[in-house]
Image 1 (cartoon, rainbow, N blue to C red):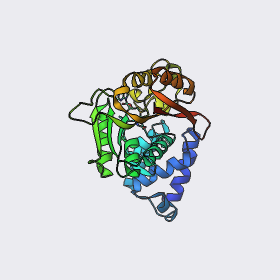
Image 2 (tube, rainbow, N blue to C red):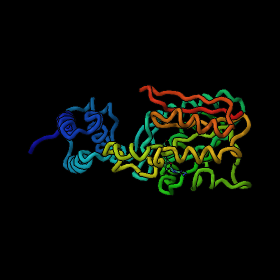
Image 3 (cartoon, helix red, strand yellow):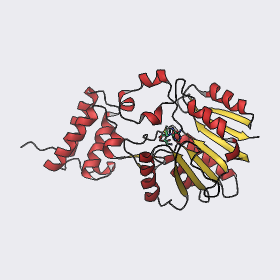
Image 4 (cartoon, rainbow, N blue to C red):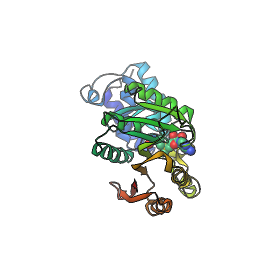
Length: 290
Ligand SMILES: C[S@@+](CC[C@H](N)C(=O)[O-])C[C@H]1O[C@@H](n2cnc3c(N)ncnc32)[C@H](O)[C@@H]1O
């Protein structure tokens, strides 16, 4: 019977995924094999000649097939890395993106510059990745995180427990600010962050298959022009943001001017900055309350 070593499997998967136009074929092959073998990537390289048994091959075959149909590898292995943290994911939540790490960085900068323990609100928390990365890096802040999806919140809850943050992050289910109840919950925040759904109708139709067909529409689609949720945040934010507080948003690649205008129209903010990401796309808006 043919012997499949780690090296041979990686080479074969790399070729197969390249043929099927799967993103990052070699990395994808390594992630799948690590998942099946329960090992770290470095261990693949130190065990190239290890023969994978029949049970491992059967599981790998199932995953390879789904991957070739463009199911995202993070859903197949049930996790991804965000801000150097392991984050559990499933198809009920968006897979955290590297671009969103810039949102976290700006939030951390803001909170560290503030010397007192801060209250932070993360709207549209999904897997909880943003709230968790902030809590891990700013020791004395406490966070409230909301999402409309119960299923996404149960993933966020699992992630919060894995990272031992249950005493600092409170999850609430509902539309934006709606689930926050005066008397029960913190109602005013030093910092409000959000990575809401912001894909427009035209962009949605043009999304890659692995995004459009697998990630939750509710996490992506932001209305005809992609700005629906920002409009509603801008309308409702006033009572929730402390006088010297800030709002930090992730935005779509060309939404900077529209979001600036939207926030200017509220007359709530004294300083609004639109920042580009490493690919020179509009990505982060920081607005300080007047
Ligand atoms: C783009 S995803 C961001 C998830 C996560 N914060 C991240 O950065 O990976 C947007 C999230 O917003 C949630 N969502 C959509 N509309 C919402 C609303 N009106 N109120 C609260 N959450 C909403 C979706 O369920 C989804 O989890």
